[in-house]
Image (cartoon, rainbow over all chains, first blue to last red; front, side, top):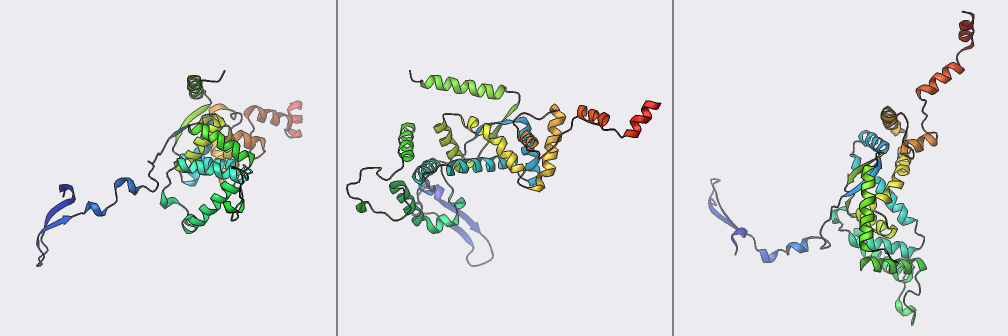
Amino acid sequence: MSDQNVRSFSVNQGSVLDGEFTLRVKPEMLPEASDQSSSGKPKSDRKFNIRIKQHDVLLFDALAEQEGVSRSVLINRLLHDFLRDELMSVQDDDARALLAVTADEQANYDDLAQSWVLDALGSDFHHILRNVLEFNDRNEQQPSDHPGAPENQFNSEAFIGLRNKLKGIKK
Amino acid sequence: MSRGILSKVIEEIGETQAEIRAEDYTMVNVRPGEKVASMLDLVSVLAGKTPSAVVAEELSSRLAAYAVSSATHAGAILDAAEEALKQSQMLQPGCALDILLKADVIEVENGFEKQIRNKLFAPKEESERGSHE
């Protein structure tokens, strides 16, 4: 056993248990370090340089000060709203879901920040997602319901075009 | 002829440099977190623009909408507008404050306009008294 996993120290509390204590951690009982991450992907914590008009910076700072948050928090809030609105502006469910899944695949989410709804309904949610991506329909579908259907039979043109574009990007 | 990797890189370098040199802009460093970063990257790639270019055009209108979302923001709007006018006497075209001005949410009267107004709309007695003297 490696010395890193063993520690010896003396205890003197005036009881019969006093004396030299030895403590051992059994590494074989612990998961590998790489298994501790929820998705196995490294956390990026990436920075972006964003170009902002000088007078907008003044308004950001004034609003942030009034609300007791940093300018960065306020900018991130607006960025999130902007990107969510962009995503929701995609009319076809399957194309919108494909964009969301692709973005999520690139991210490393912290399980602690995940919504309770997703914790509670995660499996149902993934079932619906599969239906949307495969059949462009949230309701229960089975491939056997559609024998001989060609690939992407049920998908929108937006989904097919987007999927092809994303394949090109990933290469 | 299709655009090569190098021409895209050179274009982006030029774009970034232009952004940095633009006097009306400030480059702000943000760490938006995993969720926003991954979607911003995706939208940027699909749009063929840098993340900064994707955001730059949208941010002012988003900020203006946020500013008018609550009456409690009135003080902050005044503070920012005062500072902006002290710096440059007029609001940057297209900035959130300019959008609020055009939407009649804020009103600005500069020194020259005030002088004109005082002359044109001065009380009658005062102007008459002035002419007799």
